[in-house]
Amino acid sequence: MSRSAPGAAPESVVPDLTDLDLFVRGFPYDAFARLREQAPVWWHEPTAHTPAGEGFWVVSRYRDVVGAGGDTATFSSDGTAVRDGGGTLIEDLPAGLAPGHMLNMTDPPRHPKLRRLLHASVAPRVLARIEDDLRERAVRIVDAAVAKGECDFLLDVAAELPLQAVAQLLGVPQQDRHRLFEWATATLDYADRDLGEVTELSRRALSEMQDYGRALLERKRADPGDDLMSVAATATIDDEPLADLDQRMVFSLLLAAGSETTRNAIAGGMLAFAECTGIWEDLHADRTLLAPAVEEILRWTSPTPYNRRTATADVELAGVRIRAGEKVTLWWASANRDAAVFPDPDTFDIRRTPNPHVAFGRGPHFCLGSVLARMEIRVVLEALLDRVAGFEVVGPVERVRSNKHTGIRRLPMRLEPR
Ligand code: HEM
Image (cartoon, rainbow, N blue to C red; front, top):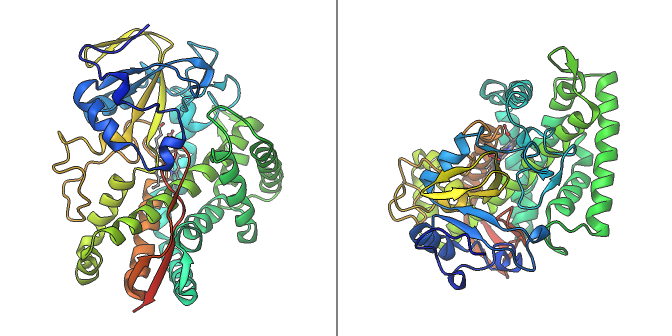
């Protein structure tokens, strides 16, 4: 049964958005341009790759993505009140695991209470205190990469600062950070599996990560510090301590959200600079362009391309009838290329203002780490501008095989010292 909207894009011109091989070739911006034009709320029929053989809605226009993102009553991030599984991925996660427990997969009244608890640790005035430390770390990271001559920019530069920052934020010893990186990569990566599938590698990584989180929480309970895991281990909501599961979910979410996305913004931004001659020199000559450049990198790379919601009631969106219980995907990456909001949307323009991108989402679930992520991108760029005169890509760029994270796995570069 076709559920497409009137004037819907013929299936033949929209590729299978659950076929992860598609994303290895880069995010399918062309297909989304056609969807925005012809079928802004489009029913994606299930294919051999689609989890549980169940279709889902694809929302691609800025206006509709922002509207649905702000309406948590109709578009639930938990979803388990109206179906067996839910969450913010196309594949259902079981009720009682992440949905209803992990901050980004909760709804009111739980969501604002949990969010308030964690917000204090990532508030701008708290982060201002670590900015100098992050800047020094960025300089050391860039110097080490420049000294190598040729490096994998993704591993040696882009991944390092977010990882060091998230270790500090969570209160994890810095020497453990590469183990965390491997676990996060193995659980988030679909390199060797399809949506909804578990492999030996991803299962083992998840179980080791959970064991590590459990032990860390025990240490924080016994000896709390001023980090986020100590908050999770000791805080209360409505006078009740957080359940064990909820505490561990804070660890998993922050590790995943804090490490994968920012590295992809930094690496994708650098690739954009490498591909657009002259812009790097412009930025070097005029540092007032740094702030708009960071925003444009976020819009351009959109490291989190989509988040799913579940319709809690029958609803009409852009003239299309969505039924209660159906999966609805909100494509931030597509909204960020909507010509109705961004003139010349397929041009990387570091002077773009205003730039109301939705790379961090929109509405009550707006990214909790946005201040930190912006700061990380900025200090890495500053260190690069100060120390790198020129750079070139010297080998094949490998992209992440995922429709949930748009990013780069390998970026061979030569960095010339300034
Ligand atoms: C460039 C980097 C980043 C991007 C593109 C990004 C993107 C996003 C997006 C799109 C959402 C909304 C999810 C939804 O509506 O379902 C989100 C939520 C969230 N992000 Fe980020 N993020 C980034 C960095 C970070 C960092 C560094 C942290 C933590 C240290 C973080 C922590 C979170 C958390 C905890 C949420 C859930 C908030 C809630 O549900 O209330 N993110 N992020």
